[in-house]
Image (cartoon, rainbow, N blue to C red; front, side):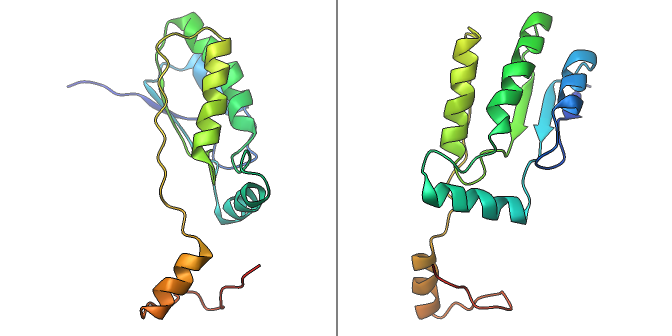
Length: 143
């Protein structure tokens, strides 16, 4: 049976990088998972994204990769990472991490991005007109 070793890099934003760096330096993991998001964090990121389409992701993610990737490069590791730090703007977060990887001269670096879960308020209005009801106890306010 093949062994797969999984490590955790964070448990919320703004967790600091020490845990992730310790796992990278001292652990022998195949995968590292990061969980930066909670409801309040998503609200903050969505607000940032609404004001500036280049924002809306956890800004520490590229800075963390700047420190993590050289550790794994030096160890000859190709650890796979799963990270939800893209928040309201996963493509831009991925772009920033890709720029870090290019700056570190990491050939063959791949990033996958999952999108499609954004539901604009106009869509909510449309769904309500078609008979859907809100599951929240308070009405949705529009800006």
